[in-house]
Image (spheres, rainbow, N blue to C red):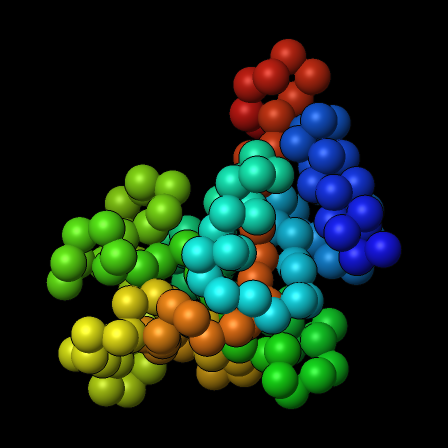
Length: 158
């Protein structure tokens, strides 16, 4: 049932060019962010988002950082589901943090003593409710957002 819901929500978001009107999505600045509560590894989350036509989220400013933090703080009531994956990692370029969608890594809000200088901490997890980022082992299981572009009926972004 969860898989059917994920597929429907994602197809709606990408095919019709708008965020689904439900409690698991946010719309901002031509982007739709859909929250998936199932805790999975970073690579699986990235794969799921790509298959649905999106990416794990890239965060370029304090507003989007707060938007995602506030959504989870206000809608997720399971303390084991508070932290989630972002699209940031240093998997592709060693010692260099990048976003999976290829956009500039132009904003950070690392937690104290982060990012860790550890060979196993290669993926950025968002820490709620602090609104900070930590470098985590990519095999940890966390919920995630997928970020989708919102387009109008002609296929161009608003």
